[in-house]
Image (cartoon, rainbow, N blue to C red; front, side, top):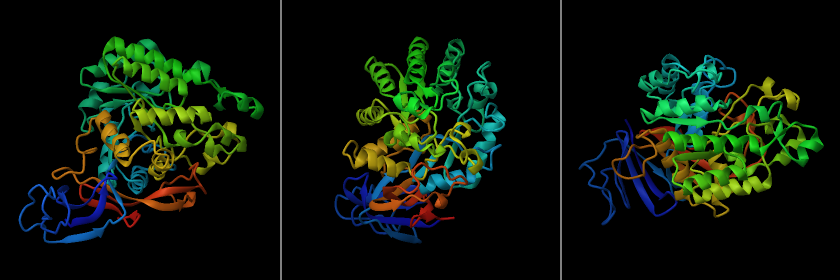
Length: 447
C-alpha cells in the first residue's frame, strides 16, 4: 500500500499542517512532516514509527482544506432492481467525487431491503465497489407497505449490522405501527428515520401549496402535512424513549417543532438536503420536472429557516437524498415525472455556497454536520473521526477557491437529473481517501 504525505492543508479550515497516511490510518499530523512522520518542534505528530513507510507519494495541498471523509445518511443507490437509474458502483463513485467515504443506502429498492438477505447484498456490493462504504438502511415495514413490521431484528443481526430503518418515499403514517417500530428498535439502540408526509393531506400533490401552486395549476403540498407527522412522532418517541430521526425536513414550522423538542431534551435528530438550503418553489414556474422533489421545494422563508436551523444545531446534519432517475422518468410532463434530484457530487459545493460563504457555518461546522454527526446517528465508528494521529484515514481535500459550472452530462451517476445543471458553484473536491486508499485524485475517480 502506498503511503501519502499531504502537505500544507488547512485542517478543517483552521491551522495549516501536514498529514501522513499509511496502512489505512493517519500516522501523524504536524508541520514539516517527512516520510518518517517527523516534523518540527511541537508538531503533534504523536510519535510516528521510526523509519516510516518506504513508498510515499507527496501531495501539495497548499490552499486546500482537509476534512474528514463525508458521511451521507440518506442516499438512493437503486440496486437491486433499478440499475437503469443507478448501481452501487456508479452511486458510490459519484459519492467519492463529492467527498463522501460512507453512504447509507435507502430501502426503496426492488426487492425492498426489508430482509437480512437484501441488506447483506447491498452491503457486499458496496465493499466490492470500493469507492465508499455502504451501510444499508432497512425498511420499517414489509414491502414499505405500512401494514406489518419488517424483520428489524434479523437485519440488525445480519452482516450489514443495520441500525437505521426507514420506509423513505413512504411515511409510516399509522401511529400504532410507528410506536411499535420505535419500541422494537429500542432493544438494540436502533433509529427510526421517518419520511414525514401525511398521505391523506398530499394526495396528488405536485409542489408546495401556496399562491404559486394556484397560479400554475398544480396540486399543492401543504407544509402541515410534514409538520403534523413530525409533531406526532416526537410525542410518540418521547413516550417510548427511543431514537427518532426526521428525514429531509423542509419547512419553517418543522424547524420550530424540532427546536422546541430539543429544548425539552427529547432524543430527536433531523436532516436537511442541500437543495432545500438553496432552491425555492419559484423554479416550478418553468414546469421543468428536474425541480420536482419530495418534499417539494418551499418558500424563501422556509429556506431561511432551515439555514438558521442548520446553523444553530436544531437540524443536525446535511443529507443529500440523492435520488437518481432514468431520462424517461424525468423528461416528461410535470405531473407524470418522478420525484427526486441528484445530490452526491454537488452537496459540498451547495453547502459552501449557502452556508459557509454566507458566514452561517465554518468549515469546522461543515465537518460536524456532514461527517461527525451523521456517522454518530448511523452508529459507524470508522467514519466521522477527527483528523488526528491514529484515526482511520478517511480524508477529503477541498479547494474552496475553485469555481465550477455544473454540467449534468459529466455526472458520474447513471442519471442526469441534477437541479444545478448550468449553475456555477464554489468549491471542488480534489482528493478523497478511503482508509488511506485514494478514490479520487486531481478531481477524478482514481480507479
